[in-house]
Length: 509
Image (tube, rainbow, N blue to C red; front, top):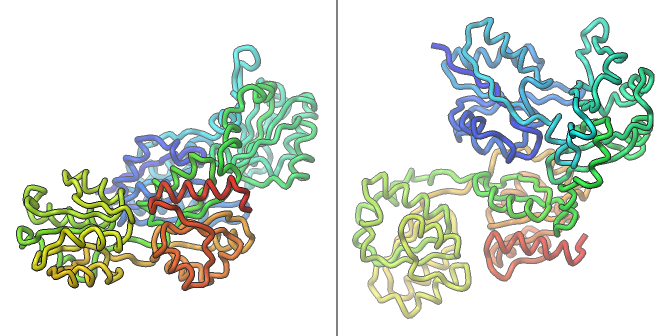
């Protein structure tokens, strides 16, 4: 039986503008075929084992020809797989979704269209420009900025188009702007008609240039504006003076700053959201991925079979909590089987995650690291008491060794392993080398080590201000020759983001 293809619109740029239906499709997809303009953070909704196939296109640089993409979708579906074809914007607004759907129809492959928020309307809206307004514009047209190059002659009716509607929106037209503006003026559109070019619309790095139809091409060349950008023509552009709501970002502490986040992809969202709320452009390059422990959970499963014998359970991370309870539930046990044990958690986030499983930590030390737990348990732990520490495969030994010195019987069991993430660092390396990353954030020593392995050279961070979550992470940076600009007083993700904002407000360039 053939599988299914979903032709999905990913929205205009801001990953939060994706639809609920699109997220549902990604969560069940066996294969995701995605474009260049789709924000990579959207891919976090896909299953961990989904096959990811990049077929993005830039001008004169096509990863895969359109005909090959069409056939790829059909072939994967014929293998019985659920396929998501993820496109920027809407699949039927210059997204070539119609071509893909026709091929699927021809070959008998079932498909669905999942519309997306098109940049033709949303990008002007983010720039404070409504494409229609009762008193200004009662019609608008969406036009491609470049036609099919294989066509013998243009099908664009410039003599009709130039004055047919109040508002004109050109997508993907920056490179052809001299030709577009000339055709519009030559065919009756006034050269002094208000116009705007909006680059990276709906994203933190969005920039808007207001101009006129006659000056637009020269202004774009003079300011070096490159794709992706849209071009909008019409009197509605004047409304931007009153409606430029997105420009309020300029008053936020991280406006205009680029911040590198190195946490694992599932955990990066909280950090990213906090930074973007403060106006930052966030680049995610996950330096680690969370994997199963080398012993395939044998040690923790053995400990869980004897769980009633433990007096204390100590958790050092959110990942440790989640992985431990996954194994507890797999053994047909739950929080009731932990009755009688005491709990300690390193950090508020770890304690909060425990609470979600119905457990209130007895001890959450003020110092969010192993030394804090050691000090807090000094007068609490009786000799001979049994302690279970579910944690990462590789971690500092100071905690179990110190507790054993107190006379405790300590079992350390790995519940996860941090490994180097499989990512392409090329773009981030270019940005670091060019000094385009203002801040780099590290939430653990493993993110530091693995990022250096991924980019291949710690010196690439010399032009970037590094912020470490705490002293252990800072020490790892120093071992690798990376200067640390600052670290928060409280070793939390929120405090890490706020430290970046503080540095930006203090004028650190």
